[in-house]
Length: 260
Image (cartoon, rainbow, N blue to C red; front, side, top):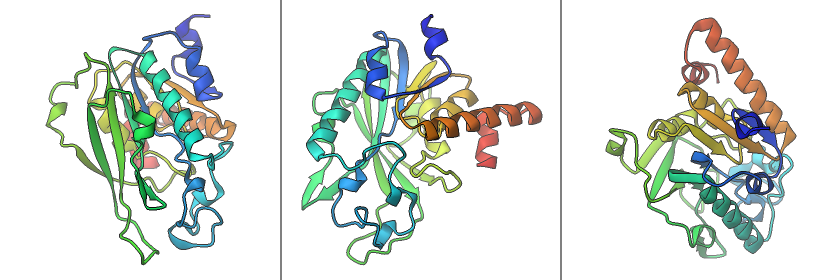
């Protein structure tokens, strides 16, 4: 089976690290991903027992499907660091990784993910801010931002005119998505459209947003997802997007922004 037959425009149900280790060097142009955040390991925010606070009623109180989101921090950081090293091996000499994570304070210490990205060539930090939100905790201000690490190979360049964007992006959070932590379509559109990448990997594919946006820009995607539930969710979303776009004659991304 060729690389194209095995991986291109496929969502692979499996462990991301295992699957990436089976892929050949420099086979991708771009990685766009956001891993599970190990939120159940966070202290003081209501995530451990679901008693309330800012997470009351949130889908993430139940955790991710098929993921252990309560790993010891050192184990979690090592896992993510190993994943990033594989992503970096897979991108071409003009490729890049856009790695989305969240900074947080844990027991009075800042977790800025340096233990994850420690020896990787970070070129830039992008802040993306969620519009709106509700804060039920009177002890601190409403958390509204996440961090994207741009980790490129040396020859990576943005698409023409994309460098006019600033490094703080504001997008509305996805509200009509069954996944507990979906990417905003507009956020992934900003990333993919800012590159000339033709083969795009998301090793934590979730509900399939990276694939949908890649299709909308006529790019190829590769998805890896541990949860069979999320694989099914993503496949259904992709197929629905294809069918509806064919009927109406819109590119898939435009349609999905309207229906989802």
